[in-house]
Image (tube, rainbow, N blue to C red; front, side, top):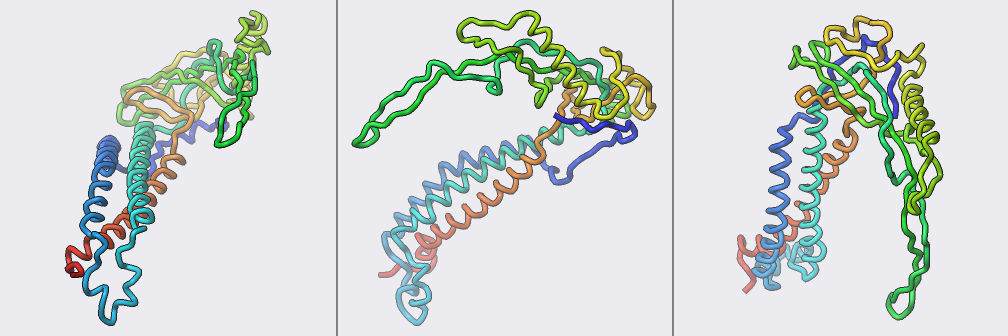
Length: 316
């Protein structure tokens, strides 16, 4: 959880040219291709392998080129080494590219990246999170693993009471929504990160609960944590909540207002502390690499087990 201490004059609209793509249509295309490849790749592989029937083209099994073309001849292991891995990589690559399209859509939708007015900070209700969990009723279990008996430790999972914070932000007008200059947006987002506070040590699986005093202390700690992270060198946190005036931009430098740099979607008034830019870029690279390698392996399989013979004649 981190916001830089902001100078309101740093307001900017940021876009990433790497993600220019018809995202919704692209995701549908990649999902459709994934399903089709899961059907067509095995079918094409089976047809080619059946057509070859352990035969090679005549020109590969005789003449002066025969020694240098042995690596291109039909082999019984082609299916295990090229066909199956190639088909799996094609399907995985297309599925990863569909995930990239989904993430890229989120990035492009939140086209505004700049200061948003913090109008309020308030704690959430009681939560149960894996961050604050514990094990109980642990025991050893025995099970058969081959010819011997193996043992494993199994436990039930319980959760301590915990709290996070909600941060209400507002933005819009000509400085926040360039394409909707007369629109103002407000969003209430859950703040995670370091400001996730454990209320007390009561083990809830047995019916134990934290006291009202402990919950009040946790609420205060959550709000204080968010304020401390947001301030980061600023003089003071304004008294919250505050009202939002779309005509007052961050450039005006109004006193007693605090702005947090976030991503905003003006179409649906959604705000995010961060967008999955890094994950989208990794999925894009991984998807295309898997797809290209898979196409190469499967193409080699098809060439060795059908195409060469169909085009150039089988051995008699």
